Length: 292
Image (cartoon, rainbow, N blue to C red; front, side, top):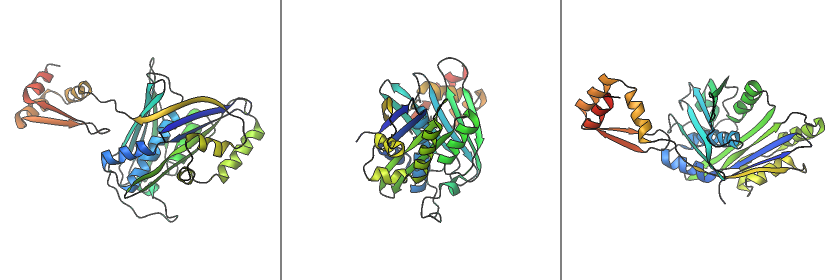
């Protein structure tokens, strides 16, 4: 079953629902970064949220979500953008990929404890114009509630968000989430019914472990509500790094630092925090960057 995001809406009820199932993507990120189980849960939730937010993106637009926190995980990062008309690319990482904490009182991964207090920032980058940034304080650290709070506070969109990652030391079993949004002119009765279904909805990890894909998650929340397809996209891991971007970062260090690096190291290595790709620069190449 491919990783997939499904976006549907009801024009009569004024409700949009997006579902995402990304176990393969989260598994790839886990293996790439050697994430602990709790870091896998945290990064997987944020990446699922980025894909949910990015389901309506146009070409050359990007969603970036960052959590800055004082907890032992040190912060989280996730991006999502369109690779083509049928595919959305996504990536993510944790500053401390090996964080380990006991399960919380409910027997679940203590993602809130790993994050501690802090803030959530969402950045939307457009093809034309300046990026839009919204920042809100973390309300729970469970990520789903924090993303819902962002939508209400920064974009004034009443929303419900559910995220989940089922992982163990052996790997990722299920990963994904749901996003329901109330559109302008919505039907009050339909919204009330959706709220009741959201309250009674089983955890998304249980639904996925029982076989629900992205569309199945949407249907589990929407019930008998008549929905129209807006968009279906495949989801896969991708990265935006390049040698040119690494060169620009090195230039930003300044001429003195570049000269010191050239003197002290025959070869200087820089790696992408998202995909771990290594970029090597010899001393002559560093000296040449000083001219820039």
